[in-house]
Length: 586
Image (cartoon, rainbow, N blue to C red; front, side):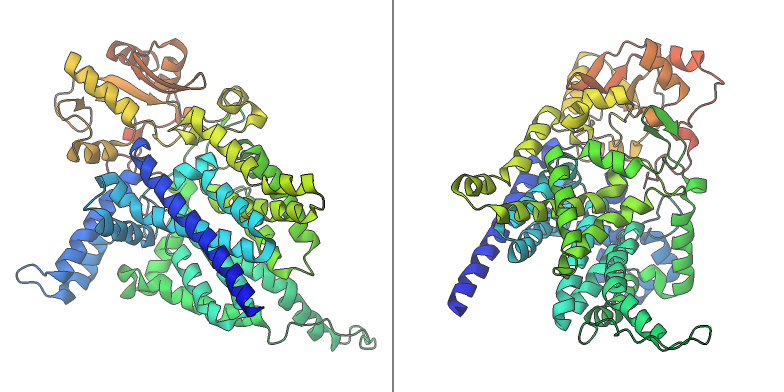
């Protein structure tokens, strides 16, 4: 019996390792095709500064000691995190990226080397999800859940990026798994605390990773404890209740996990932020003010169902955006898994963590003061939890198989979402942030319905750069971008963007530049709308018949600016002080 158990565990571990290797291989193989996204440039810039700080700490400059590198003014300059926008995020994502750069810079291209750390974390999380689900719901569940996580087209693209969204998503999932395991074994409580702390040290969203565990505790320990306490209270002079006290888990394991994990998470959060060490309360306060006042500091407009919203979206946005940006099979299996987890809430308490995990940001992002920009990007932990629920749903279906043909069908369950994901990846590649579900007619249907065609400048990749290179050989070329000049600076330093191409805002004496416009209609200025309606681009990137990026001739750009002068509209990037050369969208 023990030998058989070891064989089963070994097989599950082998599947998890295969998922890890396969995921990492796929990400590395496609990295050069995936353009540097808008916020990646700011991440790389911060990591370069951090690398200089660590180098100085290891080899102090003449006249400096190692303690000098911890002076508040030095940390303020080198650790540009957890403060006023555009530096509002905590630093763990940058430390992860920097570690990956150190490990891979000898064999990977510059951008891939900065992406390597987040890629490894994504691959490890996919393997961990596969193992976790396999041990509880069967291998069909494990394989389906992990494939749904990494192959969903938009998720696959985010898994490449050298910044915070996918790392916080992975740490969120790992924290939930560690919590479930800590309920059964106290030795997992520190892992739960580390996962929470690192998620919180990556992005403000990570602070909400505690909510599923708190919800689980409230259902199974908090409310029973409260009811036990109320039994002894006599209300209005009436007799005490004779009903039996609600049962409690022996040893209150969730309470124990929270008592160990939450303080440890707070310590981890502080440990990775030296800039907080001298003034801890001020550091937390500045971070919270920055992240809770985004509507006043850096409001980002969004196009949603044909309407441009200044900041927040209508309450139904999380449901609608999940439905239109996630493959149909994952949504169906995810809803089935949600129903199964809720129905089995008493017999399978562990499984209830995933409906809770899915629901947190579905609720938070629906609140009237929550930022609504960038389509699915701020919902990734919920979309990842839906992938886990899809695995649970597939496992339930596989468990219902009783006959030969049903058994064969069950074995194909992981193929269904994987096949649909690949069918969505191919026609939009390498711009999968423009993927929309077949349920709405793909990208053309989403355009007709009034969703963003794209949003993250992921079109500034090999296709665009190849055109720029060819155009620069044909004629003197100058370009103007409405946003994202840090990326152009870095790509130019790496020799990827041609130096002889002049860029307005970076080079002096740029006259009559062609205008590069990403079709992110939610942030269009009046001149962008003029070009949308009347312009004739000289270069277009198009997928599924929909334009994602256009380059307009200088004469048309000048005409658009002149024709719309003085019209109210969305601020241009040059008028956003935090979006020019030194800030990001968050």
